[in-house]
Length: 368
Image 1 (cartoon, helix red, strand yellow):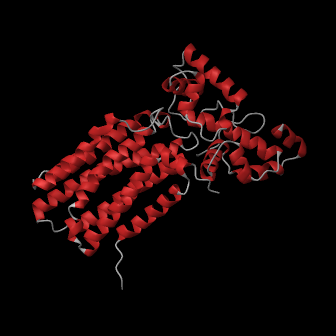
Image 2 (cartoon, one colour):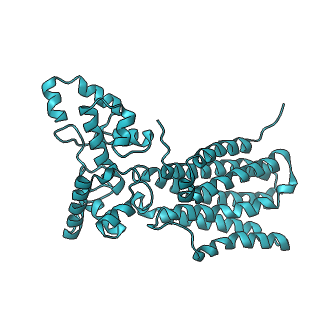
Image 3 (tube, one colour):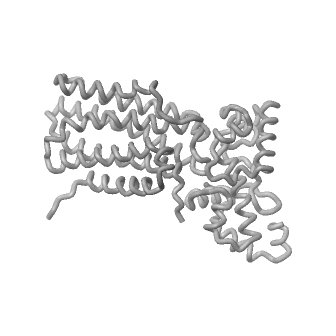
């Protein structure tokens, strides 16, 4: 019976998503090039791990540490682009090549500290990613607002996976020291495969949110007289309205008018950077105003407007749910369902069915 290493299956899984993202077209390639490169790197690395630890192919052994040294820097640069109003690489990013160059030089001269360089590389970039995550979903200025939360979680997952990889290398080094490497092959194969899978899931999640693949919360939020949640209703208890200043209230009011009059929420590619440009204010100021005045993140603030529109369309029209989610500014059914559940406590179909069962008089007050 043919033996297929688990890492080969991981490579196949990631390759399928890579192909799906590539099929989105050249526009998505330029916008998500780093995530695509990251996925391709994970696929190749998974194949090499399978060849080495599944079939004992020693020829790939020198390539593995060099490939691995590229993972942390590329992961960091990909997610860092989501935190910038003007993403993209520049010549000032060349220092991120140093870990790979150091690994390559140490391998050529045959010096022992290669493992230490790789451990420091993964651990350092893992901490750097968690530092990027300190600002929360609103820190991802370039992420689409209907998927900012998932991109943020992917950022956290990637940072933790890099740190876990560094700790795994430490465990392998200790095993080599104490037991002569008796358990190292098993640990390397299992841990590397799992970590590559987690890293791949993080890249796929962030990449899909930005590409906007068109695939077919908890609790019930406060609602207004129409049965919809008001856009101002707090849903992120982490934010406080007590410290809002007059400048915060003025900026929040300007944003409210812009959202209502220009229907900015209908733009599926809307992100915090675009909102800030329309207001002529720094992104951090817009985020802070929404956080303190409305008590929610910017992504929830915008999605509250979208769900309000979705509820209106569900109540007043016969449009199918798959059409309504696009009309409301969402690009994926999964994000729409998640946000609808957060706001109303129900899925869209159940919400519409419940409304249809109401007496005509009461239904009129809720759909007016």
